Length: 148
Figure 1 (tube, rainbow, N blue to C red):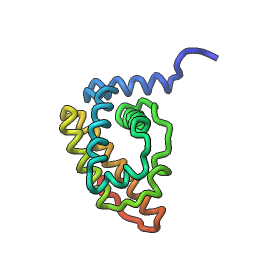
Figure 2: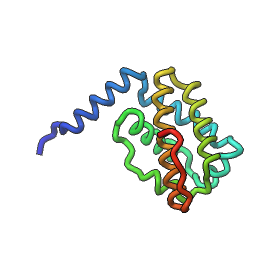
Figure 3: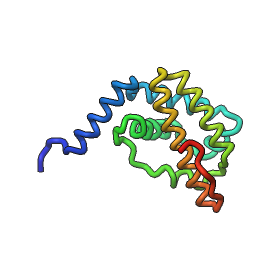
Figure 4: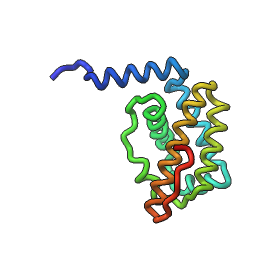
């Protein structure tokens, strides 16, 4: 067994470096975006009650979300959870995803440079579509994705 990284690890690291060079995204930016966004979520009249009723340790949750966004935005592979399972039982519908995206897009634009914000927003739209479709499917309410 070798201590050398595998070809897959090398490819992932190369992808991450390329994304960072093209967008300016790094772990510190992800942390700023995630913290600012979830501060907005917690205070939001529509989404705050849903999140605040379920999350008891925000510090741990923010760390998990930073790992998630690192994996999504930088291809870092830091996140190993199952987001659909975590969200499928939530009492959410299309209007909740609209609000989530509005807040996310605004926060990304305010927190990040233009190319970084665009990179995050494209991925946030895909995530919202995926979760919205998965939740609707689980509840027998199939809908068409908006951003695919």
